Length: 335
Image 1 (tube, one colour):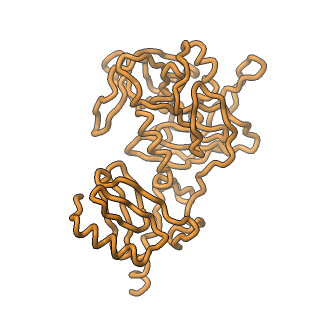
Image 2: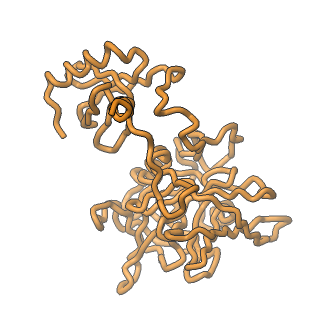
Image 3: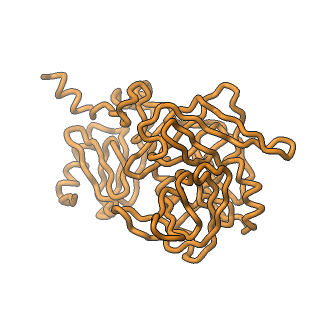
């Protein structure tokens, strides 16, 4: 949606009069809009300016400055929002330098390349098996508090989810099943789901850094760990065939690493030990035609997880509906 320049300026002036602590959006034509940001999408920013909501193209935005967090409208009060944040996570010496986003660790500097054998020994404990009454898939921890990623289709329509983890103790692997698993957020269209283990006796878990699929080059070696056909802790290796395979309107990583039913939701690694994709499908009538969701899509899902928060008190509804903007509430009240 394109916005008329004069309309943007008028909206900026009117919004600036009554929203002194609002978010500030600076545009390329030096116009400024003040208002409450309702949502940030890949291609647009949606802003409540008091009397209407503006859809501003990302291409027109140069800078976004958040308002004073101490002044929060009642419609966005904390009691209406799920607490999805993780605090005070201890640092983890992963393969490369990483930044802690509060929920997951994103690599900022790639570590040295290592052999698949060494990386499997280091990272294998962070890859899990996701079981439901209807089937099974794979997943991986993104922090030590028990938050893990998998595919939406692995847990679609299920309420009984268990996670099988292989803990390393005294050089041996010990299988343990955790049955108190909560669905935190999920996006059917991106085929991603965020889960959390909430068993009382759950320890601190090994986790994996999220890398950048954009930094990959076609032909680079990658490998996957998962549970194809229920064969847990299976490792397959291959190369990145392409980074831009379009299927169903989305772009996927294509790899020659063997992907089979049961691999869904598992990690695709580069040789730096970073997750660069989430494996989710294959072409069944061919060989070496596996696909993974790029890590950039995974990070976008995690960064905007509030928008995909699961309503735990209503299992039949996979979406959580937020309260309307302030001006809509006033209109309803007046009627």
